[in-house]
Length: 348
Ligand SMILES: [Zn+2]
Ligand SMILES: [Zn+2]
Image (cartoon, rainbow, N blue to C red; front, top):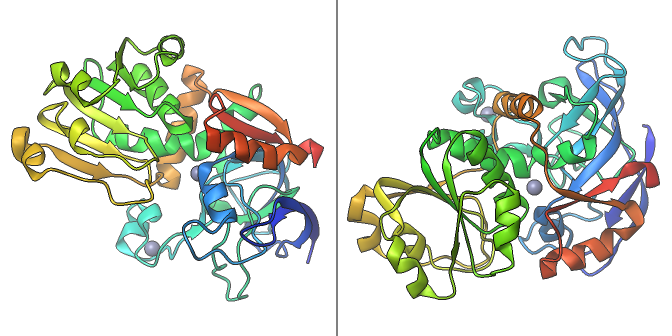
């Protein structure tokens, strides 16, 4: 088994610290990727600290991975050594259920295999280990091709934050003239703004912080609503087709439902700790719906990466050395990041 350098959490209270881990032997359909960049997602923190439960230690987080192919198994047809590739949130699924067969493997009936803290499907009993490491070995069917060659650090967060917002916006048929509001201008929200603008929508950012006006502008948003309190949204009742809610703090869905016009859609991608409130009257009015969404399929992720390459869309990032990961976590918890940390893996 190849041994590679990594950074891991030993338990829910410990800092992320260096650890050597075993990667599986290169199977016939496997791609060995030398990791160049790995984005830092809030899920990494939740998992490292066991905030969602179910973390098996040691855990190596990281599921926004960009790197170069270092080796390929004998039966690999999709990738060649030296090619730039990505690995996102999932590295496997059952491949035979209706959802897997129809390019919805993120909704695999058995549950997709996450890039970290999931059981490998090869029966080894081992857990998957993520991108805070020198290398990863992944089945070619769950590896993405990256055409971009310049801003690879800005590509890494597309593998989670990007696809998580691209997929629901596509599902809601956001296009030229669609009135879209984005609430929660963080790692996910800033990508939602960029995509909605690129799709030709009329985009509004809703924020409680006046300092976000300039940022929203920079990202290409057309309007800004300062939501000081519940009353400040009243004038905008029934005036949007789509509201993308990327808030991960506890909140009430009702105030955002009220913003939706006929058959408006509240797209939920944030994961608050406690169950949000929904007022049924706000739901039945205008035949509104609440739609949850989880990442995207491999096919759609590839489509999104190609779209970003074509339209020069990248995540806004701050590059950090591997050793700064614990400080980065603290800053993320405080919201002190515009908009994604990306680890430069050459510093490992
Ligand atoms: Zn993520
Ligand atoms: Zn399946």
